[in-house]
Image 1: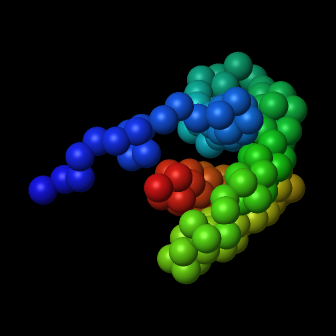
Image 2: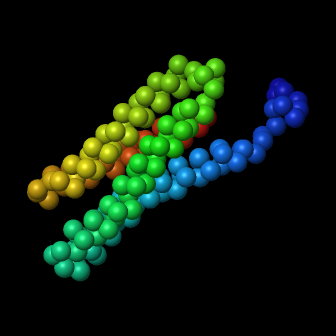
Image 3: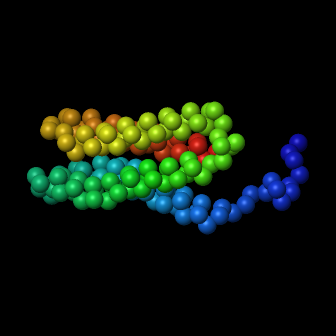
Amino acid sequence: MSAPLTLANQPQLAGALTIVRLSLHVLAATIWVGGQFVVAGLLPTIRGLGADAPRRVAAAFGRLSWPAYWLLVATGVWSYLAIPARRATTPWRVAFVVKMLVVALAGLAAWRHTRAASPRARGIWAGLASLASTAALVLGVALAG
């Protein structure tokens, strides 16, 4: 049997700062994570535009994606600081640490992708960046509780 609804346990709207923080975080994730999948999906078409096209598109994407990555990091820290210590259970803290490691791996792999010399290495680093970015997204949903 569920508890009767009272004002204390009814869903509430988020405060203004929470709305700003989470909206920025989600927007940055759509650019960082979603953009990786969009560019990967467009790559066959991009290659058909000329030998230099993939490099030029990657540079253009980088001008959008790297600021989004750092916005994700900043709003992630802000989110961590916004959680009252009494609400951060041990499993939540473990998941947060794992998420931070995965976020770092995503950034490192994406950076290595931009520096890779061979198509094979670029593919490996891009795949790792996408997997780590997706894992960070899923962990973020879990942390939202």
